[in-house]
Length: 115
Picture 1 (cartoon, rainbow, N blue to C red):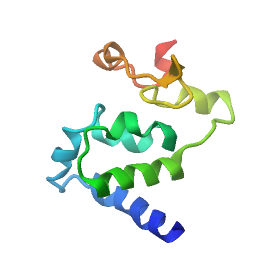
Picture 2: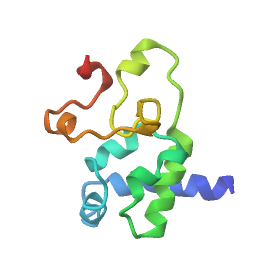
Picture 3: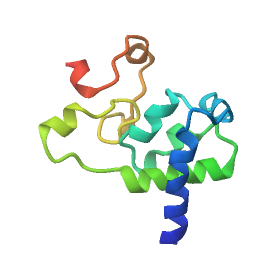
């Protein structure tokens, strides 16, 4: 199980390479800028908000494995301020991570930009 997760996490680097033209197919299926997905702090429980439109089961599994690996509880104010606000599992409205298109439209990406 751990080896399986690690192999999927390794795929993140491959997916992020600019020369991969199939990244466009994934980008069209997720609600945020493609490279932000790998820096957002979302838990495995909240991945459904991001991967709903992705039909490729392997890419879905890669994103879920990444969330298990990357999700963390910030330990200081600086870490909190530097987190991406979109789909952040620690920033919730009605018990759901938020995605507010107006923030996106105004290039408000990080928590510190909101305040």
